[in-house]
Structure formats: structure tokens, C-alpha cells
Length: 401
Image (cartoon, rainbow, N blue to C red; front, side, top):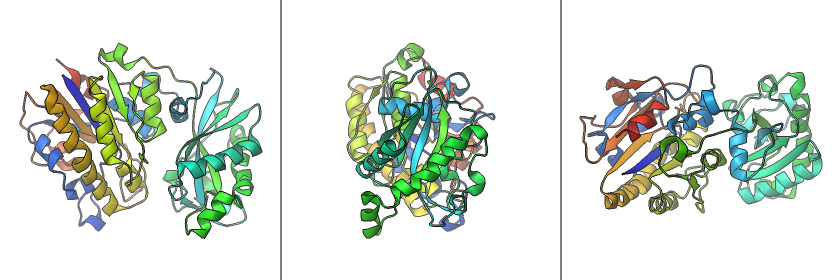
């Protein structure tokens, strides 16, 4: 038996006026998902516990069958694992975004223009993070480059009691002052953010980007604090070998901590320009040695954060056409297989940030068809009446004998 989990990050949404009162899932031409839905178990699941923030970290752990209440220690440590950072028990890590802020002189008066600094390339970002490390790195602070705008700061003997370190994608278009933590424990970190503007403002990378009409990465933004996590391997937990395909360090880090095989896909960006074909090829290759493959696609989430309805619809269509269709053909070679398709959480266009609503899912078994729904949408999934209050239970349903 082979198992495919196709995780369409942030795919679920609310009905949106700009799409004629429909959701992106309702608008998208996704013949493969809809075909599977007609003979699948379809329902909704709660992937984020009431006491946790609705992030991709806890939601993806949940879909992978891990209870975040038992193993979650913060977002950044998961990303640090992907980067290859060896953490001690007293280290605290933080996500270090490269962002674009407006030009007001006083830091608190600036507006969050772009949490991704115009989708800065990993190569450009590495040069900027190197300069930040040269300016501020010491025996306490160490900066590490990641992918695109997503990087990592490790604080020796740090604390996670930092107040509210706001994710930058939650405050797009807003003045940042009221979103800066006022905890005394965060004061030095906020000062690093402020001082980073002087390092980055006239950096050759940014001057070149401005000349090319691109947004400069003119500040770092710290959030997502956490400590070294402890996770049981996926094999020890479920008795099967798993592989991971993703563009983002968060998911690759979860995979490495769970001792899964993690594929590297050239041109995987985490946005709508990602290498969809490369992800499909990586998944097909992993099935040769793995029983379960978890294909994570960030694009719908990014489009939700940016308020891009047409691109979010397109992202869903590209997932269906260029990943799902190809992997289904590969799975036929193995005889028996099951497919789970779901988002981790909604990322509604109207709010441009994560929501904690239950997510739609389908579980398809090619040898045991069920009475499903005509199309795979938020509404049809909810109308099925199938609901799981504990997200990790979905993995148990997928793997049950």
C-alpha cells in the first residue's frame, strides 16, 4: 500500500466578492481532485487546537499525525532543523524575515509593505543575512540564511518569554508600532530589528533591487520563537517509511526531525512560480523507497497572504494539473494506494492571514470506493457531516487497515 498526502497550504477560504461570491476552491478547475472526491471519504477536521495560534507549524504537524500539544516547542526550531542548525537545550531560535518597510524615519511609524521583500531570491538574501551577521553576530546572537525571505536567529541561553512577537504576514499594510512586543525580554531583539535598517538600507543588493524596480529588504523581522523540539520518528510512530517534498524550511525541518526522507527540488520557491513539475517528479521518485509521501505546496497560502484571488485559484489549478495528475499515474503502478488531500488551515483572501476554521479533506482508497461528493469544496466537505475534532486522527483514518 502506498499513501499520498497532498497538503495544499492555506487552500481553504471564505466566499469572496472578487470571485463572484465563491471561494478559490469553488472557482478552480481541478478535475482530478473532484474526480477523487466522488468516491472518497470527504469531511472537515480541526487541525489547530483552541489554545494554539493557527500557524502552518502546528497545522502541518497535526495533519502528519503528531499532536502539537505533545511535541510543539515553537516554529523557528522546526525551520532550524531544515537549515542544519544543531541546537542546545538552552538555545532559543527565532524566524528572521527579510521584509520591506515604508520610509518613515521613526521605526514605529513604518508600515509593513511586504513580509517577503518582494520574493527576494535566496542568493540575494544570503548576502544580506551575511551582512546582518557581520554587524550583530556575537557569542549570543547567530544569524543563519534560509530560503528566500525566511531565515533564522539563534540566541544562546535565550528565553521564549518575549511577549507578542507578531508574524509579519499578519500585519500587511499596517503601521508596525503597535505590533512590536513591549516585553522587557524582547527589548534587545526589537533593537536589533531597528538597527538592521542601517545595515540594509544602502546595501548593494538592495540598491540593485531598487534600480530594477524591485522592493528592497530594508529590515529584519523577528518572530516564531522556540526551543529544541523532541519528536518520535515517523517510522517508530506509524511503522512505515515516509518522504517529504516541500519548498519551505518549516516542512523540511519537520521531516528531518521525524527522520523522513526529505527531497530537494530545484526551483521550488514556495510561491506560484514554484517548480510544480519538479515536485511531482520528486514525489514519484520517493515512492520507490517510501510508503508514504507528503507533498506540501505553499503557493495557495502565499496568494492568500498577498490578497491575490486570481493567483490563488491558479495555484489550486496548477497543483491539480501538474502534481496530482502525474502522481496518480505513478501510484497506479503500485496497485493499492490511498490519497489524502487537505489544506493545513484556511488563509482567507479577505483577512490575508491564517484562520482556525476546520479544513476540508478527502481520503481516497482506489480499492474501496465510497459515496463522496460531486466537487471538493469547503461547503461540500462541511455538508457531508463528517467531522474530526482532533486533527491527528486524520492520519489514523488514512492508515487504518
